[in-house]
Amino acid sequence: MTANNQHFPIIPRLIATSFGCGYWPWGPGTMGAIGGVAVWLAALFFCQTALSLLITTLVLIIIFTILGVWSASIAENYWGPDPSRVVMDETVGQWINMLPLAIFAGKPDVWSNSAMWVATSASLILFRFFDIVKPMGVRACEKLPRGYGIMADDILAGIYGAIILQILLMLI
Image 1 (cartoon, rainbow, N blue to C red):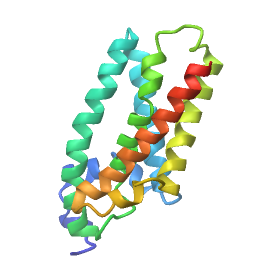
Image 2 (cartoon, one colour; image 1 turned 45 degrees about the horizontal axis):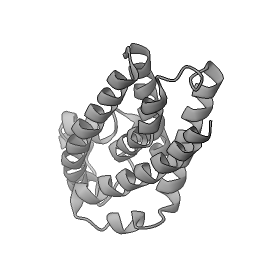
Image 3 (cartoon, rainbow, N blue to C red; image 1 turned 180 degrees about the horizontal axis):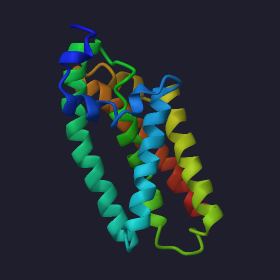
Image 4 (cartoon, rainbow, N blue to C red; image 1 turned 135 degrees about the horizontal axis):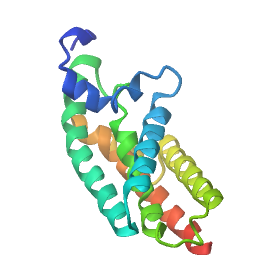
């Protein structure tokens, strides 16, 4: 293991750090989640229907979960176990947490400008809560080997956040 970035291949480094979000010095995990929100909001702008937004979100989750496991495993060779700069796990977890928002995107009464920002903010807060507190098996997921453990805890945190967000959105 070496801390030298010079030999760390650029493609896995970009993916592992969520295209640089992991280099943010104050809370790189939060910045990785915010990066996920930004990408999702761009998808919201470009997708024509709630179904296309849902499919886009699912495709992002699948592709970047696979790439995240791969790149996080490589990152451990350079930065050690579960390095803080690896934040693709937070980005993917945030997208999972936002799945209920994609489902509800087709309801105009839910998606007034203020409701959209409140729901998006709630999504970010819920995900970061479950990611930081690590309840009900989230911490145990970290024990999986290499990139699987790095990604799995945030995937489960995203699922927990999505469940709570879904309940909150049903109450609107």
